[in-house]
Image 1 (cartoon, rainbow, N blue to C red):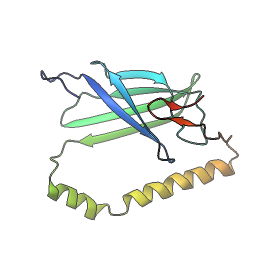
Image 2: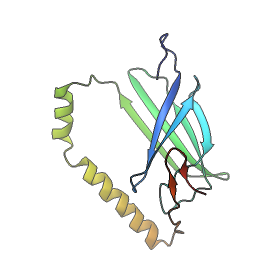
Image 3: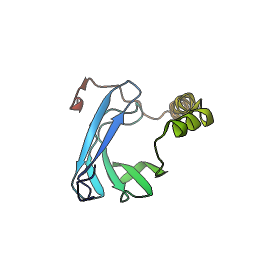
Image 4: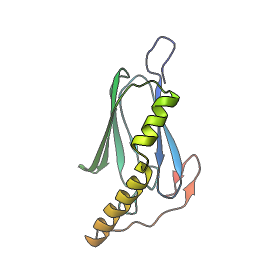
Length: 139
């Protein structure tokens, strides 16, 4: 979110898991780097004893976001998203829907494929803890 003068006031990162739980993380201030403890059980193959390291580019015609999952000194997962600014028009949305009609199903299939591969490798399994709305997964 931008202030009236165009400076960054905060970033809202909404974390979701495959159980339908959502937890918004409000990353405050003009910084473009943030760190905090993991508060949402996202995958049965990773525990809550991790932290997130976020980094963002300044909003403009192009933007990127990176997240490292940190476990001690290791970073077992890194995800990067890159995008270009586009006008949100009906035509643009229709073009996207025609171009990528099965994208949600593809993402779900790939998530389950990766989970099967991890399970076959005998990666430790973490049972899902109870979820408290607005707070995250119970420790």
